[in-house]
Length: 188
Image 1: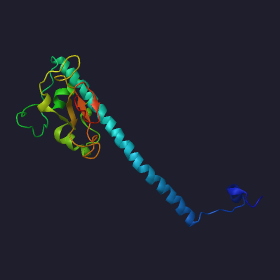
Image 2: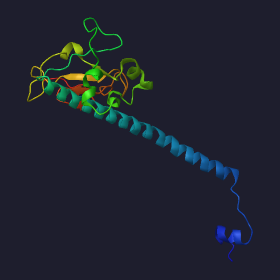
Image 3: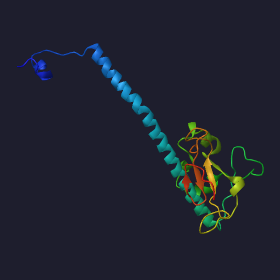
């Protein structure tokens, strides 16, 4: 056999090749470097996935609002903004979850996957804030599902779940025509 007959030849002849400490450390360093490069990318992908899941939840809630409105002559439900501590004039009003649950398959759609430790979901019963002062009991246009000619938002995340506080994409919004968007849309 040649002097360079590879690993198989060394095993056949009873010789073993051992990695040196330096070679082992180089391999570990390369693996650590690759993991360090991939970790932030993976975290961004996961955050984007949670945001998309949240948008899907809001879209389902939007469809429930449309079904509710079509059942009640296109009037929006009257709900409290914060069920655990209702603003003045909203005492005794149900939450959006209580009003819309019968139109949905699961109450899990009221949970934003980015709600930290389910903080708002456990306290309020949902991770989304109903815009009570602007929309309670108002009538939507039957065809466009707009309110007074505008497509206004009905619900949004309780907090900046999806980005930094100053980011335009920090919250998701549900509009009156069941559109869910990752940023606030200014009416024209």
